[in-house]
Length: 300
Image 1 (tube, helix red, strand yellow):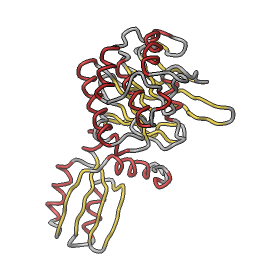
Image 2 (cartoon, helix red, strand yellow):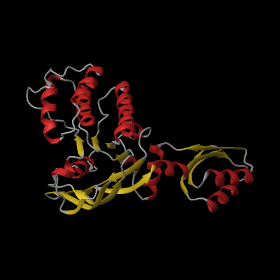
Image 3 (spheres, one colour):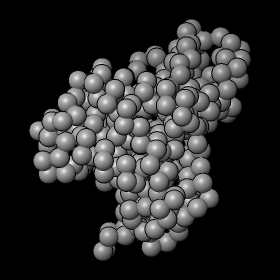
Image 4 (tube, one colour):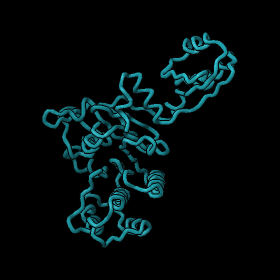
């Protein structure tokens, strides 16, 4: 498990991380959501032991990660701004990483690169942006680490490759107990793979929750009521996060169980009603509105 304990990281007068605390359980995909500049990259670099926080600490399986080679060997960071040796090939990168990750699976790396049709003897700096991302992912997957930190990993990849990498992550989780931590500003990219999500904004985590639990406790209700007083009855029984009117159609985002909401609506007998699950993006918009944040400035 990765434990982030009240860490603060500053760069001169800029506070990149402000008293951040979170737990990332092994065996689950953790999605770290936030816009550019929210602190995602800084947090991942701190988790990997590159940065030392001014306050707090990061524990990898109970051990501090900073200046601890044993803890660092359990983590691989796929940075958004990847670095490759000048004139180096993928094989050169493999030889480098074998020094830090003794469990690196060279045979599997060559097999995966062949499946992606990437030449392991070609200079990496001649690869396209998407090809470099694929190379970085293959290096991380084959390193044999327990925790794979992904910083905007899917950005720049075509849809087919994105799905292939997600399937690869799931396979690694089942066979080798890999735990991916994926940071992204694109909520739609993470919805079909993440089990736990955290929202990072202005250097702090607003909340960190299980995605399934969130989806079971918040719904979108679309209805046409017979009496305007019926809305007051709904508001008395359920916290309303959003309220939208389009003619006679009322759309409410509210908290509550599916059974409770259905029971109330059946009792009111409206002209029409429908209960819909929310997307990950809709959930975060609703949650941040409650906390007083302007969601239009939060999401790209």
